[in-house]
Length: 115
Length: 112
Image (tube, rainbow over all chains, first blue to last red; front, side, top):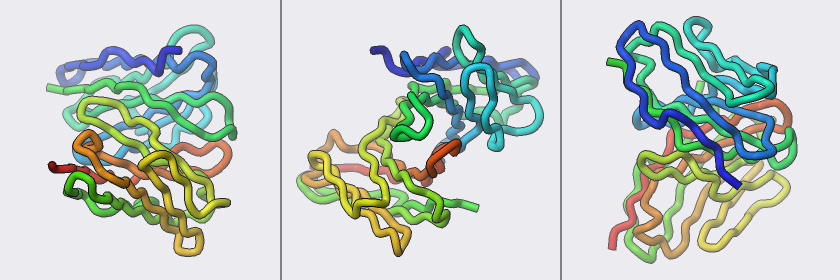
């Protein structure tokens, strides 16, 4: 059973470009969370999605950031017009069933560098 | 406002010693407390977790101690090994539609 998959693992973008980060949850998992980790910091929640629904986006900046989890395919975190402050590691996690252990399994992350 | 406070920020332990990392939380609605281990360049890996209905949980060399009245919980790593050198994060969440709230992490170095 493959774990959570994220791609790309490393992404370099110039200021003003768009970044698209992809996350495929573990098989059988229908809940996806995105977190951001700045250097020497803990992980900060951004958004929680189920298939075709955004459940909680309270941690996501109101502008330039969006997320989706379509019926088919991976979850995508999209950052438009990137700025240097967006440079960070972005992790997604998946969980099987709401309220059942609440265990979240993390992917290897995408390290975004904005030049 | 940081809801989960973790200490120490860094820790150096001799091989074979006990590593202790502490966390304190504020939100009394939290009822799930996992610990994650993260190696450089990797994603966090779930290590062990506890719910408030027990005061201690042990899995191999890893033990969580939980004090509900003090709103504190800690990770003990017995017989620490160089391979345990990593960053450890405590986290908390509540039942239902809530994400994990993480501490800032503890960088553990186990030296021979």
